[in-house]
Image (spheres, rainbow, N blue to C red):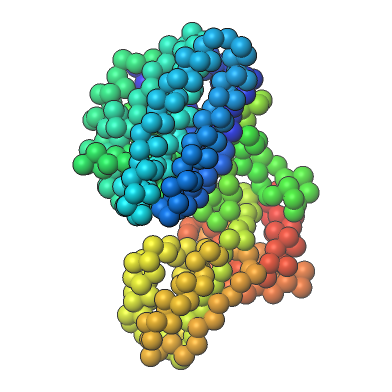
Length: 456
Ligand code: ASP
Ligand code: MG
């Protein structure tokens, strides 16, 4: 029988009402389910920070463990009151943290964190969430079983910190592991390398975990339960009365997520697109009828008149400008720069070139180090390196945006009529999105101008 895959965020697992709500939602399905969970809010960041401190200071282990455990205990008490089950379930949580403590002791002993240890330690937020949810569901009589990615055979390409699922290897194993089970709970955020080592699927990666599992088992759908009302046509902080978008194509949602919309991890659509498995988004607080998701992401339904579906933005971007006469035509420069950045683990968000400038878009946290790396390359063709901050990238997204003659130009005009100077414009890199870079101070006005004019 075919499954639905559900994903719940870590902020929806903490209180009695959260758990009762999850049970209510599960009850709405008449198929077997796989439920993927992420870490409690803030736990992954807490682990990252602690791991760094533990390297040089063993005394940082105890407060971390205390904090993690007291957080879990608080949830158990909140959900179960003074039921004696609190002690039993808490003992299970404590047992699961025993290995975490040992890993941390190893890190402090060696004063070093090899990648496989780092990935293992950081996966504990999810490992604890899934144990917690499984135990609580079972306490309330829901027959759930936990299958961690090791037991599932969720095999990855083995890249630490940012792995991808290896579908040809994972698919048969995941299918076999899940077969016949009614409700399976899985910790998100990691898979295992062929050697059986924990490999993280990138920050925010549990949406991707859920999508990958859905793909492995040819699920009916991937259902994401969020705290918000699906995708909107614009950010309510900047536009008046944004509307909810009921349908998006895979590509549109990927573009919206890549530069802005926080609701979906940009890699979520990747495993599902080819298989045509829909993503349905619900607000956990209000879901009544599963057949009416807030937003459904599926195959494009074709081009239509209101081609711009949504305007989104990101402030977490800066430009590294490499200037030089004819630089746009000189072969090899971009490959040197991109391999230097790649070696340093820095991700290039986008590249826009002209005859005299290569503009490299990079997340703000890596701007300074990228510019230093490029300086160190001492490239002759580059006469000047400029770092531009305080900008925003605006994305206008809609299927058919490229086919519609003159549309990009009209957007451009709408924005410039407000007296806004567009620093860079990029259309064509994606068939469903047009990007503009403007000064941060012009961001809100730009979004409003495009939204009011074209998003109907
Ligand atoms: N807990 C992980 C993170 O914070 C994964 C996730 O939340 O999806 O990156
Ligand atoms: Mg998340």
